[in-house]
Amino acid sequence: MAIGNIQAGTSGSFLAVLDDNGSAIALPSDSTFVWTASDASVTITPSSDSTTAVVAVPAGDAGTSITVTATVTVNGTAYAGSVTVALTPIPQVFTVVVTQTA
Image (cartoon, rainbow, N blue to C red; front, top):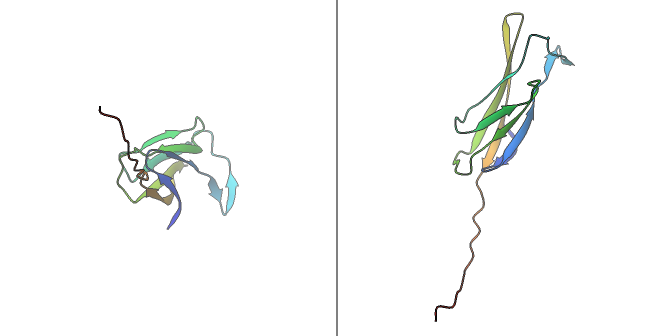
C-alpha cells in the first residue's frame, strides 16, 4: 500500500528505526542500515549514521511505484522493513509561443 508519493525528477526522504518488541532502540554500534529500492534507476543517498536516506527519482522514470527497503544485521540475523510509495509523472505544461517573423 502506498503511503505517499514522489514526483519523477524529485526525491523523497525515508527513516528506518530498529524496534525491539515495538519499542525503538538504538542500532548496535557495529550495525548500519543498508538501503535498497525496487527501481534500479533511482539514486539512494544514506545519512552518515544510515538511519535516513534520500531517494532521488530521475525525471524520465515511467514507473508507478517504488518499494524502499532498509535492512540491518544484528547478532548475525538480518531484519528488514519496507515501504511502497507512488511515483507520479512530471506534469506536462503546454504553452503557445508566438513570435514575429517579418
